[in-house]
Image (cartoon, rainbow, N blue to C red; front, side):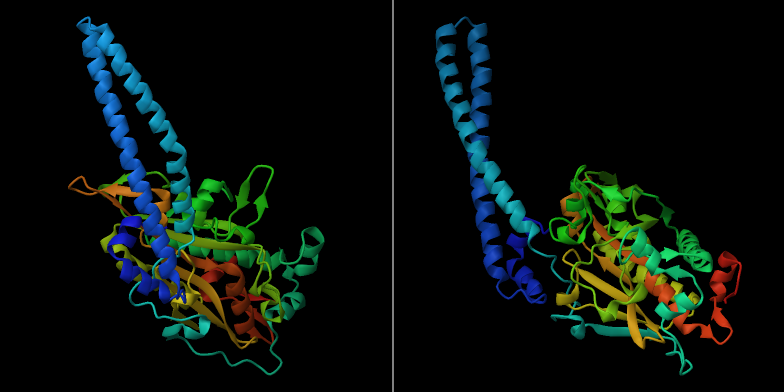
Length: 424
């Protein structure tokens, strides 16, 4: 969430930035935040003054008792009792205002970085880089949902039988391709200095709030209500929460973690003809990279993360484009996001396979993730994450783009992992 002191000190800049997201009346919410913070400070000041007076009187009472002035001490004890009651009376109001302020701050998205364009939807995103050529396929080329049936490598019907729509069963060479991609992505990340983490795939409520999935995305997460745990939508959530309520030393930075997990998303209300097959699932596999950086290093780190994700797509021989998302198409946590989309030849459309984002201090403020610099000053850190990569649409593009009359060719980079070069 945004820092109140930043909102107060840079109010116009914050309002102008949030308008890039299409929030034209955000100034009303910002004013509410500032009013509540003023009330909070005033109540806190009163409470602190009462406590300071009470502490001073306690010392004075102690001295009077030592000197045998019991009667005078008893009079002061009456005053300390009054102060205690007054302090207690302020408590509920202070708690109420702090809770109102927190809820209001949770409702405000991150301020887009200066280079982020204004816009309302994906139509306003900017293509900043393209790679590769659009594949030329035979007239009878099949989309991946037909290819998986033809070669019996992924079964949606079995998934429906076991769980429901959006939970595919990977079989034979389909399962091996899936495992090959996961191991390839993890090995490539290790080469780039990422430290592998295997986190839980459920998180508690505090973790959901820490990285911003709650309260914003509550309806999109699977909730195990008996234990009040949530199935993770991405490994970003548990891996970033490793550092919740942590004070790091400068020498521990930067932190670069990678993790493979299954991911779970309800995707409520998002089904239709455009999300057939692997294009959108309730459960899917993903390798995630997460970085924790000093503020002055985070944008260089963002560029490095993008370059790394692009290198994976190039090694898989997939044509892709890199998009700078507009304010209205970014997630609420993000200050800037780049999407990578691959081209699926049989569908003749671009499919998003990675989002790489810098959250600046938005998550760190919720997480209380800080560090002490060389001067001993405490600062919030910046958090970043990226899909490197999400598997379903990668698999879809590989199947569609590499289909031949003899079978589906496996990208050269994956053959050491699959130990076969064609699916047939």
